[in-house]
Image: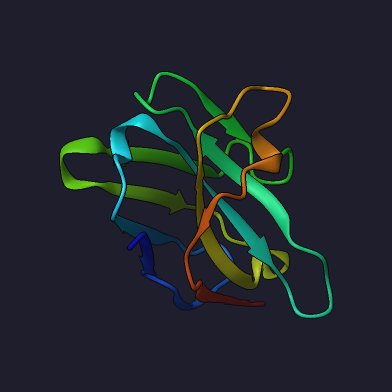
Length: 124
């Protein structure tokens, strides 16, 4: 059974930092691309960042470039998102998602496996 379990969400003031984690099980983690998506209340889900299976390539949404850093630890089946300089508009539920593909032209369409999400709230 595939599971993606996110953690690390919470409440922080604008300008602060949080580090999200996602632990995967039930599939060959090191062979899949994996990434972070988010959904704010009343808005559609958006792609935030993704990383290739070996960690060689990373992709970011323009809204988070220079502030967020995605990384993975394959021996630990883990994914991370370091979020710095947080803004109120980063408030959302953050999900990790995995798929067999992620290139510069299609990483935003990853959708094979999903976690349950972790809530991030940034106050001004």
